[in-house]
Amino acid sequence: QVQLVESGGGLVQAGGSLRLSCAASGLTFSRYAMGWFRQAPGKEREFVAAITWITSYADSVKGRFTISRDNAKNTVYLQMNSLKPEDTAVYYCVADSQFSGRNWNYWGQGTQVTVSS
Image 1 (cartoon, rainbow, N blue to C red):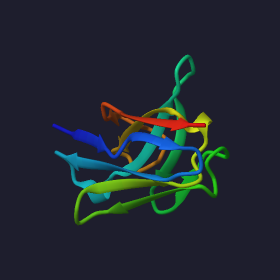
Image 2 (image 1 turned 60 degrees about the vertical axis):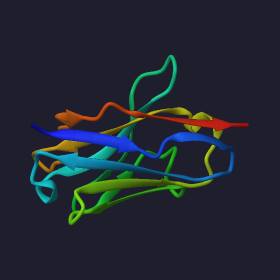
Image 3 (image 1 turned 90 degrees about the vertical axis):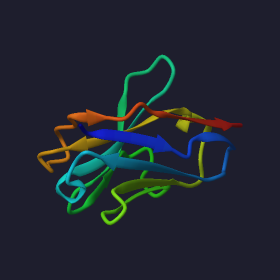
Image 4 (image 1 turned 120 degrees about the horizontal axis):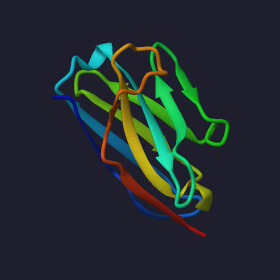
């Protein structure tokens, strides 16, 4: 059974940084594309970043967020710098068994990130 467990969320002031982690189990981690989505209150869930053979980012976070993975630890990270109040959301870790970066068939429970102004 695939499990994705996020950690590292919290409250931070605008301009600050946070690093989210997602520990994966029940899968051959290196064969999965990994990513992050987020959902702000009253808004639809949106793509943030993904890592396959390359990395990709939403325009709203490009240059501020960095996705990375450690296959030895079955963990994917999201380093978030220069945080803005509009980055406030629940952040979800996702996995794609097809390694396409488009078919996110596994989701974590989410971790709350709150950025104060």
